[in-house]
Length: 450
View 1 (tube, one colour):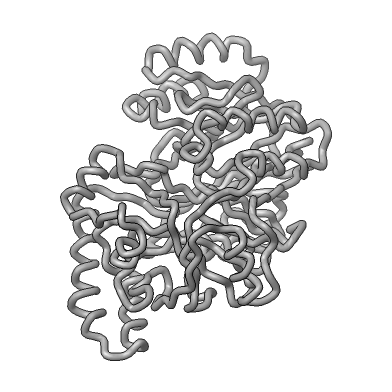
View 2 (cartoon, rainbow, N blue to C red):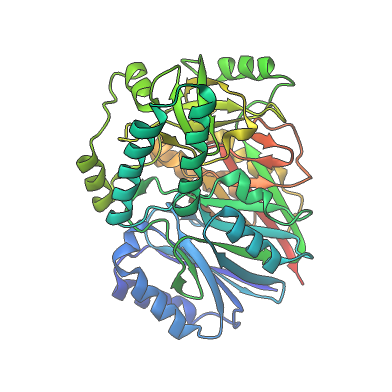
């Protein structure tokens, strides 16, 4: 097995090619797989870069996406791109597209089959289409809320409206993270890169297979061999009851308040009897709900923020674990969720997010390594970037204490599905399935590929 990481911090096509040509000239094997991760600084030239890589490695399978940043033993970068080149028959790439979660990921799961030791699953948790589709979201929201939800006379009628709206969201925009992981084959650890950029624009997230943008679909990079998959979250362990988990949340997070939620599928109609955006505005005076034109302008310019320090923590009926849905001041009356809410209680917790132990809490991921001589691919929650700023380089220091050869990615809060969880994680929201909108990280240790 040959594995090599090559990166370039440059953003302009000519500089990227010049730098990569120099580094490729030292390559002593022909890769069978290329994993390519680009940062937003390459956006304007990324299609030309992919064409260049295709001409350089025409017979090599390729998969990749945009991320917020990456790390190597030398440093961490928020510019340029990083490439993982692999020469082994123990890696393969599968992908699928479909109308909704069940169609797309049942198809992908069937393609993957069994016999793999770890799967890196890349998919958009929320896909931001073009301006026309964004307007459809806005006007659909107005129709469902004003003409149907507000006219509902009972909670049951409201839930029926939310169920219909949820189906519409899932058919066009959202792949609910926990529902996606449920669709994947049992017995194989699944690492989810459920993409959601820190700042979104039309046509994002972008995911690639064999140098082509696949749009709204899923890609699975499958590994076979001596491979270990690791998950970590920065939170205390969950409770053994609804009440215990509420007390844990109260201890860990600031500004905690118990709330009642009307929800169904991936749609929320109200929090404490009012629209979610009105609830946010009432609780956080600095937030004023944006209008349609301001929201579209942010999407056009790539400044549509997708993270918030405030959210609703839902508690699982099955495990008593918890996942937080961030609240943002966008003009949406029925609020969308990135995960299926049916497995959670209708009583939830409003809170402000924080990481008690700072960035060092993310370094505990590397303490879980079991191989002493492996190549390690890890994904760190990209919320660390706005939260810790220049301290982000400490992730490299933490990794180097335990890893001899590695590549790290800063991307949206990775999820995980495995029967081998090492403790009762707060983010275990379904049995053997972990997801939270912040504070998670994952790693694949590769000692040998078949």
